[in-house]
Length: 47
Image 1 (spheres, rainbow, N blue to C red):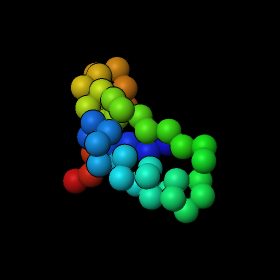
Image 2 (image 1 turned 120 degrees about the vertical axis):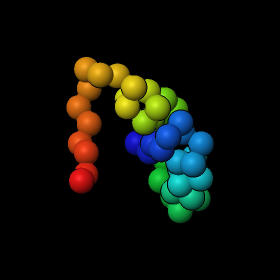
Image 3 (image 1 turned 30 degrees about the vertical axis):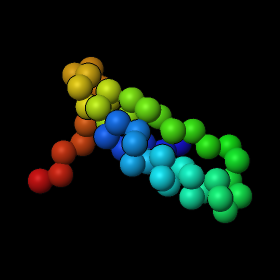
């Protein structure tokens, strides 16, 4: 599964992987925007 902020940038990676032969691919459209805005889900912070 590929993801980025809202799924737009990761679609380029998805397309490239498709071109080289991968066929079981998914793009999580909600991505970080959805996960990062939910206080009940874990987030690791790098200091």
